[in-house]
Length: 491
Image (cartoon, rainbow, N blue to C red; front, side, top):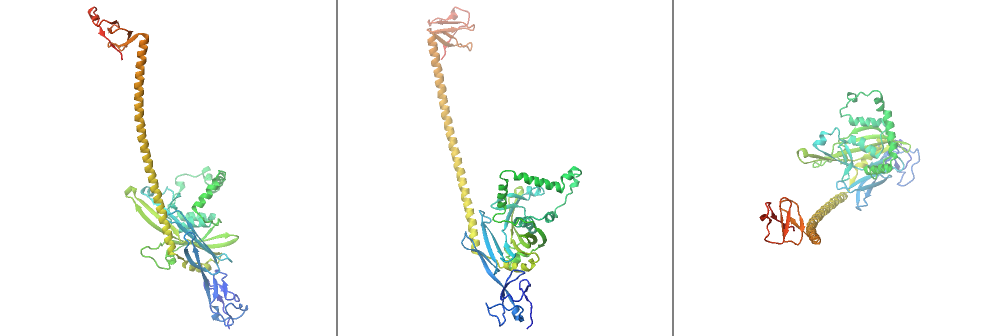
């Protein structure tokens, strides 16, 4: 019998003789099983003797897979399932959020317990952006992202899949780029934008050039970091913001280097098994990025895939027109292996990813959660409106009460003034009686003379002279050339 080399059906790597009927490929981590056995072997029997000859029929190997399912704790039902190598372990998670747009964000990881190979489904990144005529006119100066969220959705300017991988996925889920890749990443993102020459606006020379040198900028950044660390609560706030941006996921935090990038416009179609829905066309914005990093002293390579899907709506007219772009970075699958072995692992990982099936009933449960959140918000809005209406009614009642109090106050004040005037008159009358005088109104002047009391008649002239008498027939005008007028008692 001729001795023939045995190879892995997934990656083509050689399988040494003498490994029995079941083996894990040392190159791609696939679980393999011998499909045809020699007559000298029985299932479960002893492995062949090293160096023994096998015929060509014995060199047929198959890939052993197992079904990995994740049961969502909240819904109590299987959320999704897919096939992974039989010897691998796996772990899933669903991040439930108070978001009507996307209440659940799932993630999944399967790994080779005896090697570095890994398949990971990274958490989806949903984003939204609002564009108005004003923001479009000021697009060169306005920020491209905001820290706040709308319904749990990040507010961020739409990006392409390569930009998402470089700017969001890799830094958020793996680690920062090294100095070289960080610079190249920035240059890639801005290569389409017009490059303005700073020398056209300012002559950087002398101290200014030194101030903007790379070393000086780095020194100022380090100093700023040290000063921020001394601010009470800054580290706590930093950790809180980090958890808010990337919850339930801890990145590796190691420097990352880009090996290569590739546009994959048919990635979404490939993941759907080549069947596109004519009513809901799949996105053609797909990409792959291969990165390298050192993890636990071992050099790793990893392929991360991304598909960017968009939905655009418009509201308003004219200057009030607003374009709302809801876009999502999805299909964030990551394949990892030791350096030099990623290509061998990739085919097996992609076959595993294509076997992914999500439970339609679980999707219905997610939609029900979305409707529940919407109804709760509508109920809260009605309660707030009711509270506002009650507040307005309370204010109206308060206004009516204030008006009533004001009227009562006016009545009380009028009564007080009347009583005060009466008391003044009583005081004046009492004073006049006590003093034996009587007040009169002098029509020829503003003066109110107080004449001796006990007389029934009083007369006065323009010279300020007065006459009192008890004789009703007495008239001083009969005995004088002055114009005498009879005075009336003051009330």
